[in-house]
View 1 (cartoon, rainbow, N blue to C red):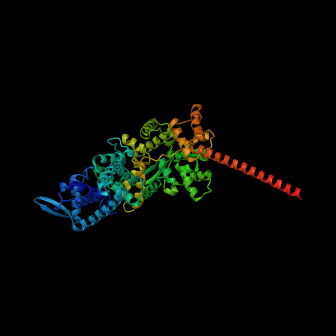
View 2 (cartoon, rainbow, N blue to C red):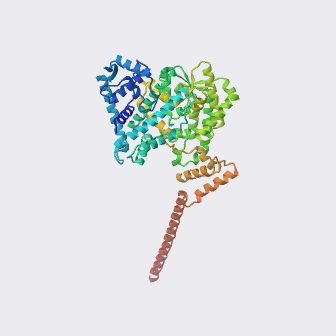
View 3 (cartoon, rainbow, N blue to C red):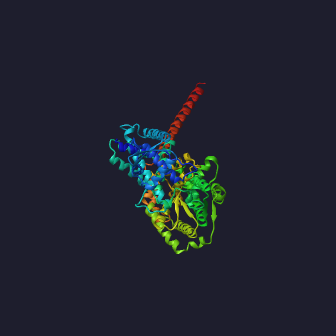
Amino acid sequence: MNTCDDAAVKRSLLLGARIRFSPSGASVRSQAIERIIEQNLASAEAAKGLTEQQLQNLVALSGHFATLRTSDIKQGIDSLEKLRKLSVTLDGRTKRYQLSDDTRSVIARIITDSEERTNIVIKDLFGSATGGEKVYSRAFLRVLCTVFSKLSEVYVQVITSRQPNKEFTEHRLLLAAIEDTLRTERNLDKEAFRYGVNRFFRESTPQFDQIKWNMAQNFYVAKALGIDTATDILSSELFREATLYCDTNVLIAGLTPGNRHHNSFLELTKACQALGVNLKVSYATAEELKSVILGHAALLKKVYEKIPDEMQKEVKNFILEGYLAERQKTPDLQLDDFIREFMETIETLRDSFGIVREDDRWFDEGQDDVEVKKIAQELSKIYEEIRKRPKGKNASIHDAILLMWVARENADNRASWIVTLDSTLAKWNAQTRKTKVITLDAFLQWMSPVTSDTANEGQLAEIFSAAIRYQLLPRDTFFRLSDFQVFADMGIETKLLPAEDVEACIRDIRQAVANADPSKAEDREKIGHIIQKYFADPGTKYKRTTEALQTQSESIKNELIKEKRLRDDAEKRVGELETGVFQRV
C-alpha cells in the first residue's frame, strides 16, 4: 500500500471514531469543521505540517463528498489557533500548520481506539478467509465509505427537499458497492468478502453497530457541511418550534412495541420534547389509523385459525405482532380483548407521547378537492414505480390530504413538516417542492449532532443498525394475512397442517394466481388445484405424515389381529387341556 492509500485508509478509520460535539459553545457546523481539520492533520504524513491549500485538498476525504469552501477551512484554522490547538511555522511566506502536542496526543488516542476497534471487526469478519484479515482491510473500508457516503447524501436530500441527481435504490447500493470494490481489489476470496460484508450489515453487535453509526453520522455531517450555508441543516433552529405531523405508519410504529421502528419513534418523541418541536396527528390521519386497525383486525380474526403456530412469527402484520408479544406476558389473552385494548390506545396518543390531534373542517372537504385527487394519482404512480405494486386509493387520498394540509400551514407562515416511513412521499416532495417531508431515519440523522448532550449513543447505534439492515439487505420474505384469506374463504382447514406445506402452498398460489380472488370461479378453480396438490402430492410432508400414520395404523391393526389369533389359540389350548384333565378324572 502506498503513502496516499495509507493516508486514505487512516482517514477512513477516523470516520469510525465519532465526531464529538460539546453541548455548548461553538455551533455544530463550526465544531465539525474543526474536528475534520484536526483529523486530517493527525492522519497526514507531512513532517513539516500542512498548508491551508493542502488541508483544503485533503478535507474532501477521498472524494466521497463535497470539499469545504476555502472560507470554511480558514475560519476553522483561525478558531483552532485561538484555542491553541495548532502550532504554526513559516516556510518562506507560507504558513504550515501542525497540531499542538496536547491535541496530537488526544487525536492519537482516538486513532488508536478506532484502529483497534476496526481491526477487531475485520478480524472477526475475515480472519479465517484466504490471505488473512489484512488483505481485506482496505477493501472493507472502501465499501463502508461508499455505502455511508451515499446514504448520507440521501438523508441530506430528504431534509433539504432536493431532487437526487439520479435514481437511488437503497437495496441495490450494498451489492453495487461490493462488486465495484471487487473489480479493483485483487487477492481477495470474493465469496468470503461478500459473506463478511453482508454479515457486518446483517448482524447487530456493539462493535458492528458503533462503526455503522459513527461512519453514517460523520459522513452525514461532512455532506451537510458542503451545502449552501444559507441552508444550515446542522442547526437546531431548523426544527425549533416547528410542528411535525405524524404519518399513519409512524403512529403504528409507536403503538406497537414489537415494530422494527418502535425505538426510532421513541427517540423522535424525546428529541421533539428536548427541542420544543410539536408532534401532531391530523384528523385525516387519526381516521385512517382507526380504519387501518379495524381492517387488519377484521382480517386477522377471519384468518387467525388458519395460520399454523410455527408460521405466526413469519406473518408480517402489526396487530398480530403486538398480540403475540402480549401473549408472552399474558398467555391466556384472547384476540378480541387485545384488539379492543389496541383500539383504545389511539385515544392515549397525547397522554403517552404528547401527540396533539389537529381537527379542521377542511379535512372533510379535502377529499373532493381537485388538487388532492391529482396529487393522489401522482403518489400512486410513484409508489408503484418504487414498490412494484399499486397503492390503495384511500391511502393515496389520505397522503394527498396530509401533504396539502401541511402546504397550507406553511403558506400561513407556520413551520410544519410531515414525518413518515414512506419514502415515496419524500420523492414526490423533492419533485414538486410543495411541502416539507422528512423520513424518520433522516430525522434521526439530523437530530443526533444537535442533541449530542442528551442523545443515547448506544441506543441510537442499535436503532440505526436495524434500520439500515432493512434498507440495504434483501428483505426477508414475510407472509401477509391476505395469504391465508383464500383458505378462510374456501373453508379449508390449515391450522394443523405442517407449516412447510402451508408455506409452499401460499408461494405456489402467489406465483400462479397473482391477486387471487376466491369469489371468482376461475381463480377458485386454480387455487383449488394447487391446494389439492398439497393434500394429495406424495412429496408433501402432510401426505408423507398421513401415509406414515396410515402405515403405522395398519401395522398396529395387524399386530392386534395377530395378538387376537394367538390369544384365541391359547384359550382354545387351555380349553383342550382342561377337557383332558376332566376326562381322566
